Length: 417
Ligand code: NRN
Image (spheres, rainbow, N blue to C red):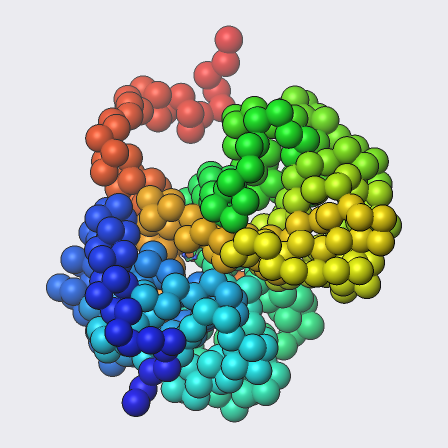
């Protein structure tokens, strides 16, 4: 059996979710038509470690229709949608993923998709890339190229590149304009609020909403929390980003101060220990803690466990920690990325562009096999323009075109006042 999922009988539900996603991903579906006709991935083995969601299903089915054989493992032990995994197994994708994996099972699934000895590898968070560069170097050395979906993964790959250890070229899909400007900002902005609401159903309006990190993810979350009537406080370590937050109209404070007044906290920094013991100790009774970063290191759960005298699951995806003085702190999704664990991740319409970039990146690697160096690349900007144009067209929006005179003006230096 070339798959392992929680419950194959869930396939029917999974198919309905995949159908729903594909109905909202016009750019990727247009690429699927092109891939089905031209088969640019014919005979290629692709191994992917991505969040197994209805949108990822749309991507891997597109790669398969392009001629590839696909192996898929989840990129988080809690983010797999089991019904989608069941449908993919039925659809001939070699999927090894289920919600609620132990760390051992999580890495066992990664080793299973690596064992396919893939030509191209897709990743989200770089756990597959790290595995191929440490425990499976023999397989890694035969890979033609890879892609990386998210900021955290690109940071890890640039570290590998700096050390001169990259075994294959990698395309940083995260760095495409039509990925991070939309997925990281508007996708995470909405899906993080979605995760918090599905888990807690609390009122956002009137609450003190603390966002740690003002990168594209933090900006999106802060923007959407403000839109729902929260009083948003941003914490940062980077003075430029802190200044941006200030001039975008948000309060900016150190976490030590924000911790005393916050009602809802979201970490979006890509770093560890952003919320730790010293902050937890001064938080208000009832404070809610959520992480939007890729790994579960941003909220120091060990400190929380040590401070608590009682711990219980009070709602699905909500763990209540009671401190010695009776204050209760609520941790969402065990500190893992709340949008994909407590909700369904970003909406299909925004993953449409992220995964259009993934599909083009895989095709690019195959077309440029042997030409690329072992470094981190960004896709050509023409691909961003093509994806953005397809997206606008699918939304029924038309824009202006430069006249010949304007083109000349914009490419000249002589014309002045
Ligand atoms: N629905 C989703 N399916 C989804 N929402 C966010 N992501 C998803 N992947 C598959 C990823 C974004 O692209 C999580 C990554 O960390 C982020 O870059």
